[in-house]
Image (tube, rainbow, N blue to C red; front, side, top):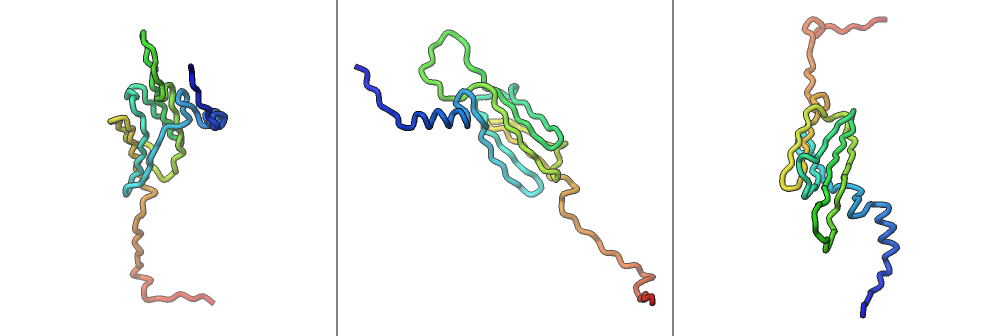
Length: 143
């Protein structure tokens, strides 16, 4: 005898999978971002992805991260398949105040870490006020 339980949220789950992605076709890769002084740090969770399958592109001020988790091949029978497979992609629009020519990228323990420095032109700076010695004692008023 086969006993089935009904799931009243099955249709809702199907709808959300179509909109937000499924385990086979995820919509986005998880990300954290924060600022540390004069640099921004962005981390993407990409467990089980080889470094060779990660592709980073910057065009104008859009950063694109692509990665692929390849499905296993061979003579085997899947018992459970909950980890997403296939191509992942994420685009970030970065501000003009960042130095996109000096982005650093590192991948360790399934986390892709990008460090984006703030551009020199966007850093706060002091402006020295100069006093012209020849004009310091005169007041010019024209009538």
